[in-house]
Structure formats: structure tokens, C-alpha cells
Image 1 (cartoon, rainbow over the protein chains, first blue to last red):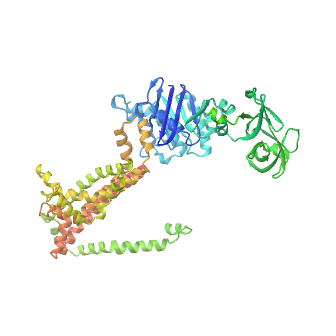
Image 2: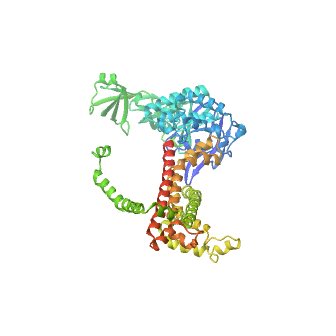
Image 3: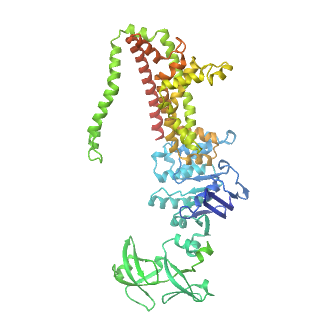
Length: 359
Length: 277
């Protein structure tokens, strides 16, 4: 079941939550709505579910207009950040809820409900918890039960609102891989909201980056990461360094370093900003080539297998962050407070006005 | 002993002091009067006691008191929950005022309430004259007793349900709706079970309060023997006739009955809260 969002607007008092958004979610795809808090991603998800009404615009499921349809009639499965399990019901009763509240003529028989619930509990690998109450389960288990409950009604689309937001880092990582595998099994059109770029990139088929109620970029995880449409997307998808750069005939120049910028082949002598990821910066203990940039190491922090450096250089206004493997760091023999030389090996250039023109 | 051990190393010490004060306070204010009262009852011969508590007039008052209190508490259960719902869920002009008004039965001297109710509901009163047209008489009937008891019991249900309702996650309702449940089903299967412990507590408190109420009832009930005499009134009447034994005997029945009721409802509450964790 595809979902079509057609020029949807929503505001709360004078706050514009969703600003003229049009999107199509294709059948069977798992899409991440990614953005900072206040970017409108949750509001958009709730509008798709029917938990909020848009001010203007339409929502269509598989071409059929559902904008006016009550949430209970839309056939959506909704998973909440804080699970929203009914705490006075057992796990079994929770999962069975959607089936038992059906009108009598469409309600399956008791045995059929039991079979279905147990099948779903097996699917989420929690069949042994059927007779427990939610408060007896861990956060990760509760969220899997919430997912089983949403799937019990055989929803046409599955909507997840920051489903792993309340869990600790390790459980989160496990659960999102599990969700990916589950989606590959059941293939229901799914949209999940997250502010965690790593989660979005790892789990989804497609990423929609939102900011201030608008869609900034829409594409595959690789596309969005490798070719960010604008500085906002670039910054939101990871740490970033900004170097002052001259742009001339398809080249970006940071100091004496020349990096390709083919999209600007027709520009002459302009200035812009070159965006460089921390792992795209090479660090040397000496000036190995004439074009390396001199810098001073202000801070060294060792994070597991990688070492992060904060460097001060004339080519950038802010501190430059660089990352290198621990063995390489030891081979270089760098120390805090001493000089080093750096060279960006790859960059993405944006002209000063691109934030506006691409927004 | 576990409590004493656990208190060591606390940020705020003083278990001994506070516990000692608590026991002293409970002893002086509660246990000593009740104990003395029960002790006094044991000095009665069984026959005196039995005759005092099974007098026909007293039996009639039990029926009125317990029956009216139950009805009043039930009315408060429904409408108190409704008032709490409106106060928690909606914004409207004058909400703060309505919220404050709920406490009025706590604050207003019960005699004042009683006189006000008579003025309103007597067959010549503001409200009573219109009810009289339909043949409904409130003052000096059991209906009047129920009205008075409902009035004084309202805050108990509202104030116990209100905080629970405030904590009730709106996500529950949304989850229920997204699973295909209609509004009534959500109310019946999700909201009411969550409110049940608070509703039971409010009900028990309203009932207990109604059972012991005196001031607001005696004016509107008219105190007609066998018809509108509540049990507390008989206790006062006995005491005024220097029949302290009779007063103590009836009082003991009330005490035991109230204690049993609260025990049952507390048991129910413990059972529900244990289930819902």
C-alpha cells in the first residue's frame, strides 16, 4: 500500500509544524523520516496515521483519499516511543486487543485469535511472555510487544514514532537490526521517525531529511550521505568541518590544496565553504608536501579504536576535527599542543547562498 | 528492624524521631478516643447492647443511613468522575473557578450547607417550588438526605480521580484507536480499568464521609422518626437524653460497619493495583 502526501500543511498556533510537504512512500518500502526535534517529522507521521488533522492538503493510501477517515478506520499500525502498552492487560491481551475490539460479525473466533497472537509473539520472539504484564518486561521487550500488537490488525501501513528512542544504546542497535530483518520478512509499507542519523542510514530503504517543517532531501541512505543536497543535510548526517575555499573552474582551493568540484565548472573566482568529514582529513607530523595546511593540535581524545583530534588552522574559522585509526596515530607520534599538518582529501562545496536556494 | 537499618546513611536522618511522633500523634488523636469508646461499650451487658442496637427506630435509621450513603456515593462516583474528566481534559473559561468550587463542600460549615439546601429544596424554595409541581418532594424525605450526602461527598471522588487522570497517557487512547477501537470501547476497556483503583478509593471515601455526616443532613431531613432519621442523629439524640450506653452501642455498630466497608474496598484496591502494577 503506497502512501501519498499531497501539499500538507499543519500549524499549532503560530508554529508551523509541517510546511507544504508532498511525498510518496512506495509500497513495501521502509522509510526513515529524519530530522532534529521540532522539524515536523512526528507531526507528519501523526497526520498520516490520522492522529492529527492537516490544515490543508490530502493523504491518500494507494490512491484512496483517507484524509477525513478516523484513525480507527484507516488500517494503520502505530508504534509509540514509550510503547503505550495497556498496563492492566497481559501481553497476550495487549496483542489480541485489536482483534477483540472488532464488531462481532468481523471478529475472529477465540481459537483463531489465540493462534494469531501466539504466531505474532513467536515472530517477535517473545511467546514465553504471553501471560506476563508489561511492567514485568524490559524496554526492548515492551517495544517488540507493541510492534506485535500493531501488526495483529494486519495494518496496511506501519508507522513508528521514534520506536527506539527510549532504549539504551546497545538494545537500540540490536532492535533496529531486528526491525530491518522483520521488515524484509513481512514487507508492509513502513515509515519510522528518528532523530538518529545512524539509525536512519542503517535501517531504511529510503531517508527523508526534514527541517523546520520542510523536506530537505529525499533519497536512498547512500545518496543522502554521499550527496547531501545542502549544508543542513550535510551537517545533520555527521560531524563536519568547514574550510574557506576558493572556487574556480570546477576546483575548490583550500590554501594550496586543490579538490575537484565539478558541479562548479562554470564558476570563476568565487568563494564558498568546503565541507569535509573528520575521516576525510589526513594528518601528518611533518610537512610532507608543499600544500599541506599547518595546524596545532588542541585536544586528543581516544574513543575506542579511533583517535579524534581537534586542530586549529588558518584555513577554517572553527576548530577542525579529524579522525584517524589508533595505530596510525601512534605511528605519527602526535602530542597535544604540538604542530601537525593536515590535508582534506575530499570535500563538498556549497556557495554561501545555497542554504537558502536549496532549502 | 529493617526500617531502622535502612534509615542509617539516609540523606535526611530522623527515623526514630518521626516514627515516635507519628505513634504518639496517632495514639493521642485516634487510638485513645476510639479505644476508650470501645472500652466503654464493653461495660454494657449484652442485653443492653442488643436492645439498644436493634430498637426498631434504630434499625430504620441504619437502612436510611447506609442506603442513602450508598446511593449518594454511587451518584458521586459517576458525576465526580465526569467532573474530574472535564477539569483534566478540557480548557474552558472559568476552569480555575470550577476547580476551586469542587472543594467548597470541604470548606463550608456543614450546617450552613444544610440550611442552604433546605432553603433551596423546601416546597416553597427556589428549586423546591418547581419540583413540587411534579409532585417531587425533596426536603424532609429520603431524597433530601441523599441530596445532602451527595453534596458533601463530591470532592472525594473528584480529588482522587483527578491526579490519576492527569497521569493517564493520551497515547493509550491513541493506541486503542489506531487498533480499530471506537470511542466507547476505548473508554470501557482502556480508560475505566486504569481509573478503577482511584474510583474505588474515591467511592470508599465518599461513602465513609456520608455515613458519618450530621450537620448538613439534619436540616433537610426533618428528622421524622422511622422515616428520615439518620443513625448519627440517633446517637446525638441518645446522648442528649443522657443515654450514653445507647449512644455508645449504636456508635459501635457504625464503627464496625464503616471499618468492614473500608476493609473490603481497600482489599479490592490492593487487588487491582497489584494486577496493574
